[in-house]
Image (cartoon, rainbow, N blue to C red; front, side, top):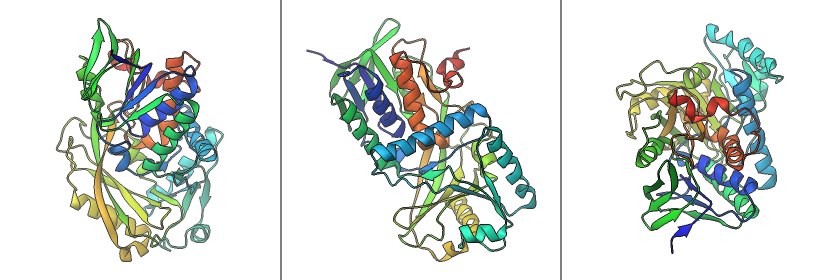
Length: 392
């Protein structure tokens, strides 16, 4: 007899785990939800990224999107915990006079959405972060950001899911090898261990989401990998207590790409981003480079990133770097994630393409997708993220 489920989620990273959690909360009690991943849960991008929670005030929609999600992280900490949640706030720094002018611009963006950020002078900055270079002219401090450990956060989400619905079935090391179709509808998946039939299948495969779409006979989704080189220090040596971002990081990380994302000869770039870790280490980024699925460490680009970090926190020059690695961000070609149904194939849903904000946005992504599947009004306007926009 064929195995059946109500919902199959493919991809056990942070987004997939969030989808499982919120579907367990919103779908009818007893709904059978199966999470599949070809490797361990949180074993790919979610194991090789920075865990920052970042409110982005670009416009009213993006502020609501990110701020709602960051609030949901705090709620998950209250209900479940166990994932090194740390509401550090964020300091936006600059050493270029032209960039210092951006403090007031970013402060006004927050204020326009009813939020608040504070401009700090040199004295106030040293009081908050005495380990920073003393010649920095000041900073913008936003209290709403934070840091989590993504691998542990995936576990917290799945624990919550099982508390709401004991029928949640998590299956790592179970690769999907094919899609089961009936006309214009998806009716399940074929795995290495057999077929599973279901009315709904959610593609949460990040940089591998285009492959899964092709497996269903659909065009490749407009998502490409964007590599990032990271380094982490040893324990108990971090010179910082707050998440730090070079204010130019906003343009670098969240602006439109200045190169063709589909090419693989991008020289890459970097802007400082540092996070204190619960063990006293310091996680250092951030570089960005389009080069396909290549996960080779770009030592030159990482070296420039480390030098930039030392410019802001000189104590890092004496901190041992104990590990370096490369992660692949799922970059959507229009800079917005895909969250919702894929109309050409009924029953197929997408939750992917968050680039560097996947950790931040995973709770609201899970909520929006679960609300759509359950036929409920969405917490915020989901229209900008509907995958159908790429079918026009």
